Length: 309
Ligand code: NDP
Ligand code: OXD
Image 1 (tube, rainbow, N blue to C red):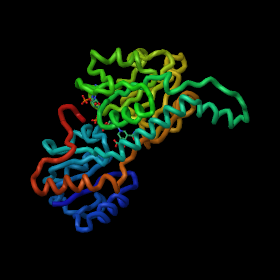
Image 2 (tube, protein in one colour):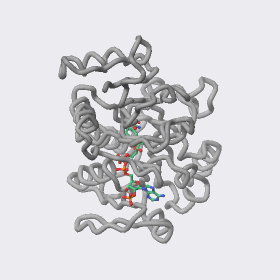
Image 3 (cartoon, helix red, strand yellow):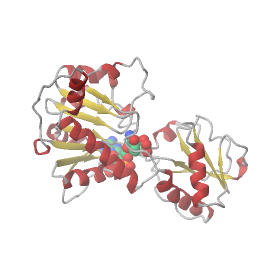
Image 4 (cartoon, rainbow, N blue to C red):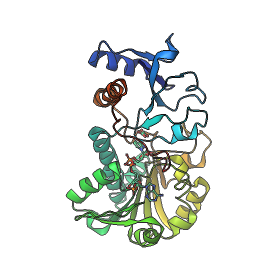
């Protein structure tokens, strides 16, 4: 039994070294080095090359290095009937909450406009809004969405959520399903997308959905680029239906240099960094699942392949 690590972003050595620092005896390989394919029972992947999972005949688990598993579900060549797991980590949730808070406060206090003014040496006070003027609507009241809701509520923000299944939360109104969607949108002056990307949520941030928001609402997409119908965004901002957007994720990453989002004054861009799995924090849960595979115990953080998340 052994683990293979597959990712193409230059972080393979960092991850492998962290595994070995924490668990020196662990049989862990990265996919570019010679490794015993028949022995691999766990593949830990992040945007792996399509087809790269087909060479492991004894795979028992495909684990995402992160919270999302959309890139695993999209790989139709992956061996079927193999457990899929994802990361659930308080540090990942805390980082996401900090990012979204920064985006909200930057928007409320016009930080981007002042950066632009500074470039022009222009002293021009602008009207700003306060936390109490807004309701933050979180699409996706799951692990990250609920942690965010708690953080924002503690700062005195009005927060509502939207999920697929009904939930009873004392401190938070959570709308659910298609029936609850429009009312949820009507109330959200700042919309944060924290949905998983699935067949049902693909393209959900489109002209129709975003037109249900109050005029001048602000969009923060920290989930996946595939949630946003990109060609709908600029017309919605230019018409005033949206006052702007903060985007961390894009249909194509890195965002192509010629993409119109780069130059639009109402759009703030970050390079998929809202929250990034920290190897030191995440390795223990991945190794715990490896132990469970070896001991034939149920795995932690399993994905439901029917739901796709
Ligand atoms: P969870 O699976 O814990 O939560 C997903 C939430 O979305 C649940 O509340 C779920 O509803 C809801 N949901 C799913 N489908 C629908 C639907 N069709 N309609 C309404 N609600 C729906 O995921 P996480 O919170 O852990 O992560 C969310 C996503 O954040 C990840 O999938 C990933 O894509 C993204 N992410 C982005 C990062 C970044 O750096 N930009 C970093 C980490 C994650 P229910 O509760 O009823 O199941
Ligand atoms: C994740 C991500 O899904 O970083 O964890 O996007």
